[in-house]
Amino acid sequence: MAKTARMPKKKCCQDKPRCRRCPLRALAEGTLPPGYTVKKRRLVKLDKADKVLAKSTRKAA
Image 1 (cartoon, rainbow, N blue to C red):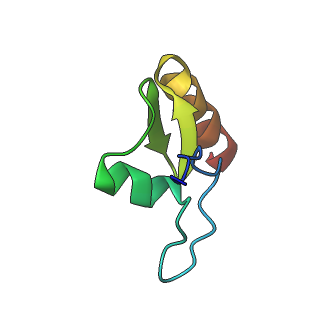
Image 2 (cartoon, helix red, strand yellow):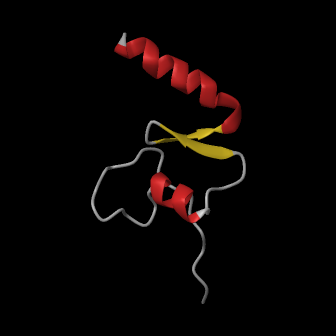
């Protein structure tokens, strides 16, 4: 029986070593699903990546 691929978690838990579903690990291994990226340790869709980044910088200011 083959293992099924699972979506990465929505947010990185910052454990060391990285868990199997970590979005940062998936990004490094090149196994992120098409149309997704990682911004500020969060899994986001490419269309909304700029909005997430702008929202997070607005909170910090």
